[in-house]
Length: 247
Length: 247
DNA sequence: CGACTCGTTGAGTGATATCAAACCCGGTGG
DNA sequence: CCACCGGGTTTGATATCACTCAACGAGTCG
Image (cartoon, rainbow over all chains, first blue to last red; front, side):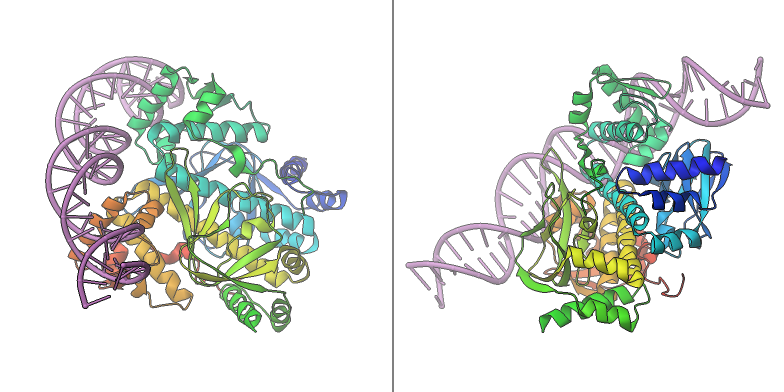
């Protein structure tokens, strides 16, 4: 029964950016999903490990990708929410180059890697949709390189708040101007290359300016235009408007 | 005649990480490549533009991907050399989310986007190889987020020097410890999130420590181990050892 | 109620940016 | 052949944003 939910979640996600016909849907529903719960801060993927026999999709909860520097410093390279693939790169790469860790309690669905590969061979639409998913991930990484490399603290934080809002809304999890941040300020800092202390001061400044209000990790955007301006944010890089006809 | 060179270059690149059989090779050689020269600093792709009717592969020379912040600051998000696809993401995404610009004079080959898409449908090995190429790009972006976000100036610069050496060698362009850097110090700064001035001082420090010597953009690595240590570098994320059998 | 994690605030420090000027070198034109 | 020009590199002096260290507060869990 839960497997159905997994299939539907995946279909919904893929259908946002590609055409998925009834034949494709049937094929996805026929996949052997295995649903399980993961508690934070468990690792879903570890750097250096060989690809597992299955790929994983998030049904609920949040995850992060992170890498560690020699110095011990951590950099979070992306956040993921319901509908996202956790280890798409492992569909074809043999060894993991980073860690994936649960940010909150999660429910995830595993699919056999072989079955998924087979599906990409027999169902071009699905292959295309999954491929696009990976391309969008890459686009987000590029934006993060910019965010971390060339924006000041205020813009960095504001940018992440924007991205989270837009993605939450797109995934149907929350409003873009009213959502729960699933991470500590320290983790937020690790995502943008700042200290927890400085994240705190910067958040306070955004609140003081009346742009957002934050209460116990619940974010309420008071002025979306100002937040976007502060965060130098444009949703282009998320490729949400990807029209499923353009072929 | 030059088209042959383009096909061979592409075959060589894809074959490094995937099995490409004689049938696949024939299909690639049959592609209608168009070869052209591009002068620096011409744009090959512009942010916001609709996907063109062709995809582009580098035959010689160097390119960079970059994005601009509202403030005018530039962030280079990756460098590319012979054998690399310039606009793989545009194979399936409808609008460009960043710019691609020639770093030096380049010779590139264009292939019809439709033909390439067709090829991915009819030749699974090729689809797989091209897909993997994109996954490796994504892995490099992740490493760059870490580099830009959590390393100090010395490590950032050393890391880029390592990556360049390894990739040049893998592409058969130069030795990993003896190569020409195709960029100014300002561009190097834009790649790692530093000022040209600070890049200069940092390079000088690496030279003073006897780790590398640099003369007019020619890099000679004096002590590879020290350089790797200084740059916190591990080649894992480049996925060069991707064994073509692991399926 | 104690212990722990997370958030908050203050004071001092430091890495990197900014500003400014000189220098070097290849290219160009007289 | 020399003078000039311009982009890139180099160096010094100063400014600043974000880090570090340290302490305290607030909520949560056992």
